[in-house]
Amino acid sequence: MAEEYEVVPVTPLRKIEQRLEKIEQGSPGYTAVLKDLAGMIKENQKTVDDLIKTNSGLIANIGGLSEHLGELTKKFDKFMESIEVSETSEEPEEWTKIKESNKKLEDMNQELKDKIKKLERKMKLVELSKYYYPGQRQRG
Image (cartoon, rainbow, N blue to C red; front, top):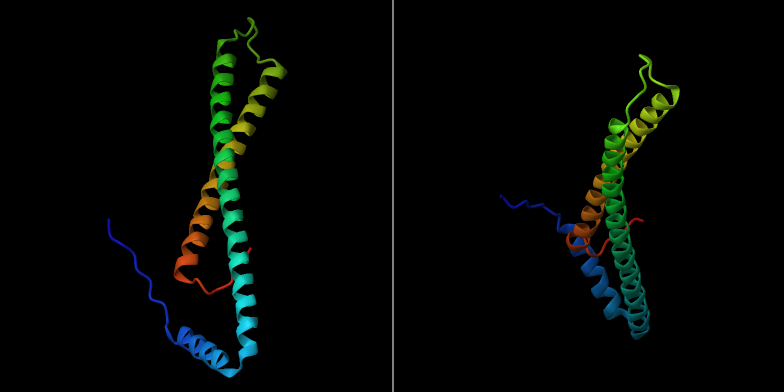
């Protein structure tokens, strides 16, 4: 499998580095402010990491729920097939309602699976963006 690469412009990073050097060389009072700022950035990143871990756990639980819903739907289908309809040529109204409910459950299950896949992709992008753009603020 081929590795993917991304080109990142270096000019804005160099400007930020130069500004930081000027601030560090400016006065000793800035050092304390910068240390506080660095501490806040670390705490913010820790909070973001905790949120991502929690969100990953939630996605895993939702994925498990989705699988269980799929199994339940299959069992329900088997159960419905095993029921013999009386000798009438028409389906009972309850039977039709149950089939409609079952179809809605299947549709909702598929939508849930699609949303989980999208959410997983977004989380992976957010996680990767921390490594490619470590200085940028994360959107939440």
